[in-house]
Every structure is written in structure tokens, then in C-alpha cells.
Image (cartoon, rainbow, N blue to C red; front, side):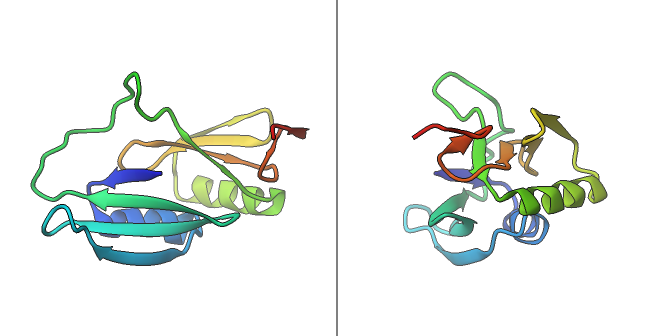
Length: 128
């Protein structure tokens, strides 16, 4: 999955420092001069990619049919607890559902979910 970033440094700070997803690579976007394509390791062999498109004035994030509702990322329960505490300390508004899902928005408004279950499980039940 690739999302858009309005500020590369802010996005890296949020995903790498706050959420502890290591930045694995940043390269020039071959399709748009001055644009970057960068990736975060979100665990389980998965990467979350971003593009920035400086000068395109893309407007704020919005939910639309066929668009992104939210990105769900599985983390182990101990990591979930630690990240919940970090979100609270950073003052990031969030909502906890079912004691295992925490919903919040990234700096550009994309909705994220951290799920305290192993990949392929949801609230203790297999979804594979």
C-alpha cells in the first residue's frame, strides 16, 4: 500500500519515532521530479510506502468511495501497549475498541488501526 505525505520529515518522525516502524529506504520517485518514494517496515514482512508530490496541492485527506478507509497493522500485545502509551504521551487523539484495536490518524489524516493480535487473527479468531 502506498499513501501520500505532505511533509516527508514529519511523516518519518511519526512512523519511525512514534510508531517504531523503521524507515527502510527513501528513493527519488521516477514518475515525478522532486518527489520521494519511501518505505517503513511494519512487521510480518510488510512495508508501508509513501509518496510526496511537492507543488501539486493535492488537498487534505478525505474518505471517498473506492478510497482508503483505514490501514490495519497487527502488532504483538506488548508493542500495542507500549505504542498506546506513546500515542497518549504525544497527545495523539485515539479511540480504543474491543480492548485490542486502537484507531488514530497520521499527520495527513489517514486513519490507522493498531491491532493487538497476530497477523491473520482478529480479536482472537482466525481470519485466514
